[in-house]
Image 1 (tube, rainbow, N blue to C red):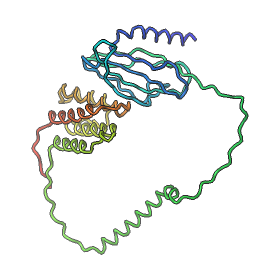
Image 2 (image 1 turned 180 degrees about the vertical axis):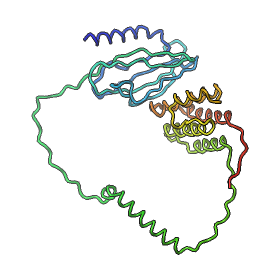
Image 3 (image 1 turned 45 degrees about the vertical axis):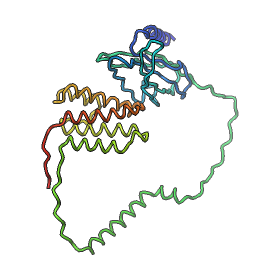
Image 4 (image 1 turned 30 degrees about the vertical axis):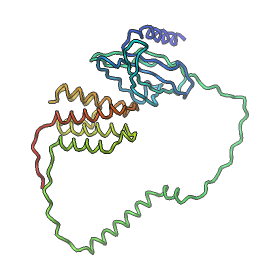
Length: 308
């Protein structure tokens, strides 16, 4: 009980200081039953200094899981004329008890800011132990299904089909007369930045985010950028997390302005890929515009070469 009282005191003190914070956290309700969902709202100023949101994964703590993230959405504050951005997280927990939600770290105009700590109470579900045991239901045998049988033996069927196709190909090649292969035309190898710009344009033509595939769109775009960085700056970008990559680029030839532009794109994409945030149409279009600008401004001017 003393431990719960101490946790409650810390949360109360955090709530008293909440009015002075630039960033805040609030629970829709402070208690729930095991397996239910509760909404955690994070808010930050939407007009003024630049705000970098915390990267949120599938869990907040070992006891609290994140099952969905929505936003951030911009809305006016309570009659003050200012605007704030709100990110809503749906949380769940499967262990009873009082679980603390630690402060989440933002960066506002280059300085760290933390939300207030919170306390979530998870209650158990009462079990009716007065009922008598029920008899077991009889087993039901499913009728034979050719489609189910084909799925269960798909590997064997695919192997047999591959062997038959290989045998047919060998017979075809034996009967076919050899012909002189035409000389291959020279292939023009475009400069690296032009290849990457072509990949970005091809991704834009697929219209993934317009079809609701926001995560696939953001993942493909950042993979293209990481591949470009690997070739351009000789940094293993595809094997690094966002923080590891940005740390290694500090000693590269990339300027600080382009490092900041890249950081904003990668962290925004991480919110979509790992925190299940849903970006707006403007944010998706701005992501593509920023990627094209980044590639063009960091391009190494090398003339095109030819390969036989």
